[in-house]
Image (cartoon, rainbow, N blue to C red; front, side):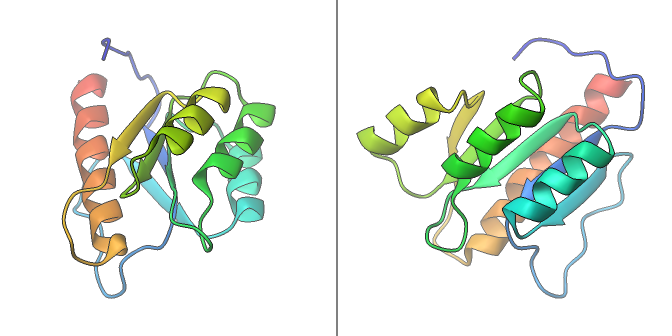
Length: 131
């Protein structure tokens, strides 16, 4: 990953469920969880994001379709496709939809917690870039 300069407060949009009863650790990164494509696109048009993380956990969250829609709004924002599914078809769809990174969600626990861990790691990375 290359070094990125971030002038404004870094902003992450996470397409997927936020874990119930837990809050993100205090950070200098603005993190918003959205649970529908429509909400994701509304947030993208309201303000730019520095990073978008899309959960791919069909049928509730189709990250590949979300990425295709994101690319209509912003072709330059980095997009991470996060899934516990790793197969050739998903990888080909990720490439076709212009995903920046495709990552495997860790753990066997609830998907919400795995997504939250990924968002937390991404927030820490963005904080370091902003220093």
